[in-house]
Amino acid sequence: MDLLRVTSDERTQILKLYNVDNTRLKQDIEMITTWKSKQPHLQVDVSDEFLEKLLLKNKFSVERCKEKLENYYTLRGTNKDLLEGYEKILPSQEALTFLPLPQLTQNYERIIVMKLINTDPKIYDLVRVFKFAVSLNEMMLRHDGSLGIRVLIDYTGFTVKHLATWNPVILMRYYSLAEKAYSLRIMELEFINYPSFVNKIFSIFRMFLRPKIYERIKLHENLESLYKVIPKKYLPEDYGGTNGKISDLLEKWDKEVKTQENFLLECANTVANEELRPPESQENDLFGTGEILKLYNIDNARLKEDIEVLKIWKSKQPHLEKNLSDNFFEKLLLKNKFSIERCKEKLENYYTLRGKNKDLLEDYEKIVPSQKAVTFLPIPELTRNYERIVVMKIINPDLKTYDLVPAFKLALAVNEMMLRHDGSLGIRLILDYTGFTLKHLSTWNPIILMRYYNLAEKAYSLRILGLECINCPSFINKVFSIFKMFLRPKIYERIKLHENLESLYGVIPKEQLPKDYGGTNSSISNLLEKWDEEVEKQQSFLLECANTIANEDLRPPESQENDLFGTGGTFKTLSLD
Image (cartoon, rainbow, N blue to C red):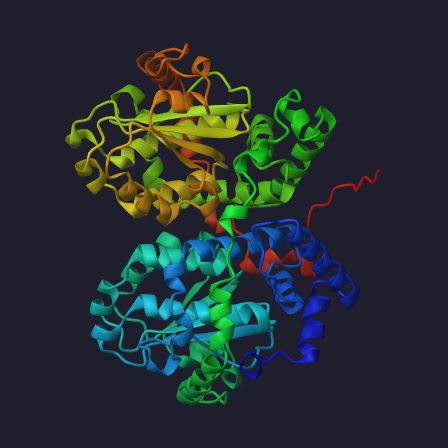
């Protein structure tokens, strides 16, 4: 595709950066194709060209590509409203551009220009903008062989009235789709002609951008500043460059989109067949074979070796200063299925995301569980499947005391302790809606919900194995519509409704439940008393945890992220049987 031009020489040089030749590329594509053929719910085929671009955008990690391929089929199926009619949108007729430039930069990056081409706030519609962006993402995932995108965001004509139309949930949904399903890699965001209220824009961006990406935002006071990052020759004439006019490029994209209409319509239907998805229970088909470490074929020697690898890696990260115990590393490995690379990512997140969400940790060490309106209560005994049951229910139905922020602060305090002491395979939540009314639901802030869930999953490695809903109200679908905004589809599909306790017993045997649900474990009130004592005892520890965050002054430059281009990294001895 000429509008997403990559020369054969550029392709060769990019493959060399990753030390990948055509033989290795062919092998990797074959591995992914074989894996996909064994996933009955991923039926529609994708081309080798698609898989090549997928590998490139995921740094030739086959495992990451499998995850992104699953996301591609699944997330698009659960976000169909963002794809509906996207094949008919013409770029030149929209209020805002999402315009890739045809020539790659000297660093093999693709420049994307975002700017208003019609400043009337009445026709400014983010959903339509994102629909066009998604259609471009489809084409880029098949034809764009760049290393990533550098987004030039021009705020000329952008007013507070435009900003007032921004829906953070829509922004988050698109960003999640772009990154997780389309493997979009943002190298940097270049702001020009920005308004006086740019800090308000930052506060919204901060809600949904990962910290690593948020820190790549750069403000340019003039074009000379921009030229230092993007040389003039790569820019459109509108910015003093020689790379065509925006209006001409938009006309070309209009023609391209019309040409690709059938292709885009076909892509919109390339989604997971949920009826053929293997049962989630098969994920844990190793249960019942013995101790938890044996489930992963891990012995103490291997565990010790993995912990040492993580400690060595951490010691080379100057911004991750405070030490962590071996017990912490062991639980981190367990919660990430003993994947060293995933643990490194989660360790980075643990330090960084908590530093970016200090308001959710503030004074969490002073929380008294029994005095909160909502519980986040782990049951002390593991199930036969090595799961930890956690009960969430209202213990004070007075709407005046119902506040999600303290509830999540309690949950985070418990998450801190679980990350060091809970050796379960994951948690199974009992969501008891007794006493929950529409007035309670009306207080829910989707942004707070998303922030907590993001923190719990990405920083605390929380693995949700099931959500068991009991005593559900008549408006439960309204609850689910909010859950759907922030839960990953895989987790959302683990929600189960139970009409009665007998149904719940089919998932969690009575003997593993509190007395309140006909079980033989301690009552919820007794367990809350014990947790009151435990949290009070752990106050100093929790306060120390709250201060265990990344030292941003010592963070290495982002360019060091790509140490695969040099000799850095942490290696383990490869043992072949």
